[in-house]
Image 1: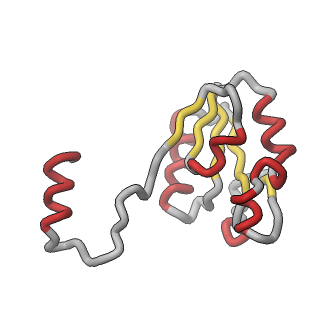
Image 2: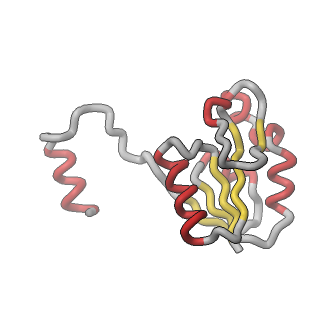
Length: 124
């Protein structure tokens, strides 16, 4: 069984990916939302783990902000799938899959950029 953990809303790209993966591949599994930022509160998640009001505190002291959720997940034998690398350290000795995203900063118009062409040739 797989437990899916996300920090994103189903309205974001990564959140939609996590939702689709969960619904298509393992709807009998569990999915949890760790709410680092309250703007990502999403009705799709039945019982999100809500941290402090400050997103900065939630990232800085995740172990304290989400203690009950972390304990729940650490007491399963499931493989964990995470879409937020920032929360990985709080799960110790667990089998885990991490989706790494947003590793290439697209901060400028890349339509006619030779950098994008180089990326496509090497990785796609």
